[in-house]
Length: 132
Image (cartoon, rainbow, N blue to C red):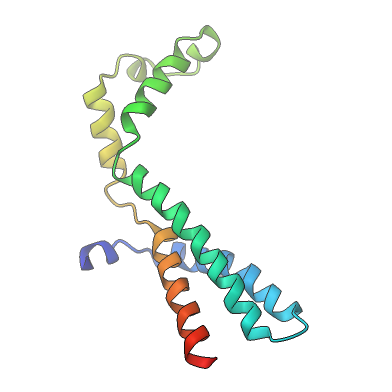
């Protein structure tokens, strides 16, 4: 668990936080009534959306969709129009090489949507039950 948290890059995390907190902050400032309640509600919705995206991205990071991706790319390359854009190495690449290449590419990846979704959900619960 700690090893996975070491993969977090602060610049990417800060940009994700700014982007995902922009909408709840704007809605809280434009709310006419209870601003903290509006912020908590919108933050909960954003957290749940991030959790759904994080679950899908987790499937991608674990390689559950690699074989489908290999055959989809191979099928697209079978059309003559797309054939000129692909390199010779990718045309003759075996499925083992493709899977290993994707595994190496994902070695340093971190699931920011899942992480931020869990954090935002915890913050929403603390604000909702701690303050109200």
